[in-house]
Image (cartoon, rainbow, N blue to C red; front, top):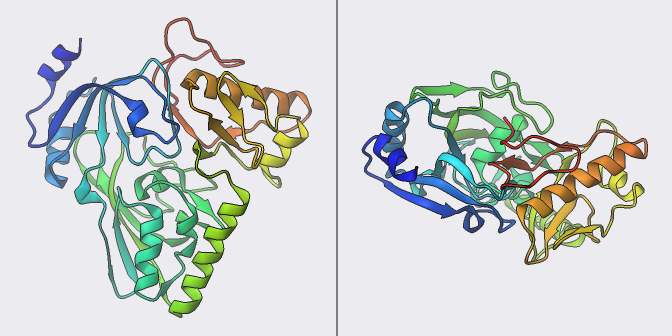
Length: 315
């Protein structure tokens, strides 16, 4: 099946690889294989690939894999790995331009070195600019929609797009950007600030993260978005889920909106644990928690998720 898929893909200057375990590419360290992984040589190579790739072949872009759970059955079609040329960060005046593969923390550090304020909160967000655009990531009082000027990239057919936060329908941990958009870079609006104050704020955020969140473990960051007017961790704690385990997956004792792979968990263990938490919160009269971690791929044969019968990836 994989061989025939490669035969249908367009010639590229980058690299194709078959049956690559996605556990290598996610912070959870779990997940079945990607049928094909494509690593573009450059911006034009990515556009040419999309223009030449048959429309019936699924395509998914993966950055740092920080808030991504790949199911044990793997991913059909092509996974695009963000290339190195999309990780740069530059600035011109108070506008910071960052590639989709740039780590959010590196955007914050670049702005700080340039004496630019307003992007300090990015030091507290794991993952890359592309992922942040996709979900309107935020932390410590800031969100992508507050600082993005425009986002740029290709659609599934290889056509170039450029859009503002309003045009992408950015809301709390959500974007209406079409699922087939592949981000390449974005411009951030900053302001001239005091370098000492900027660095102090970033140091404060890093310390706060260390005090409040689990570190040195395999996790995907915050699991559920906060419900309106509340905190997801408080709902999880009230439902008695702190420390709950399924297989080698654990609800963190330190911050119960984090799920942890203790070393031998499967993607099925982690997703089942998350769905069990959602069910217990709802059964206790709490809100319906919305996954912040993106779940992709297929369940392995014979697997089922509590309260969730779908076998394919979320849109």
